[in-house]
Picture 1 (cartoon, rainbow, N blue to C red):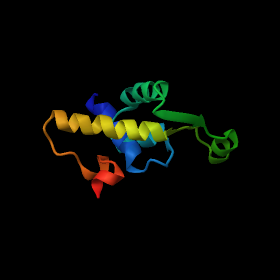
Picture 2: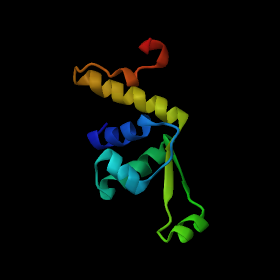
Picture 3: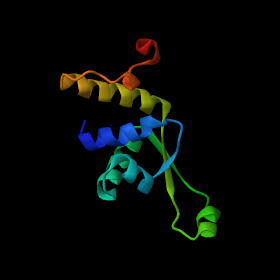
Picture 4: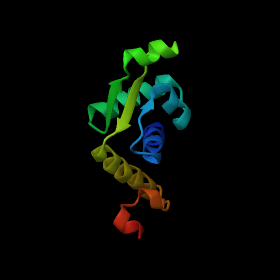
Amino acid sequence: MTMPTQAVLRAFLHDPGREHYGLGLCELAGMPSGTLYPILARLEQIGWVESRWEDPETHVTEGRPRRRYYRITADGAAQARNAIARAYRSRRQAVPAWLLPPEAAS
């Protein structure tokens, strides 16, 4: 798993129930949109992330372009935690507590 993909997943895992729009995720993950959007497309394709377009009335009222919102799925969050933990272990680094399953963190 690439470091940019890990950064995107960490952004989602910070608050797994929250929806994020693309440019907000760019800021959270610290990467340009040209790097972010292909990652989001791949994560959505494998079912780790789902997306929706916002209601057109919202962006018209606010006078800005329409946003596409992304949310990590429950299965995606579990898979992401496991994948990132494996990446830490492969580098022989301690796995952060927030990546451990709730029963293992106690």
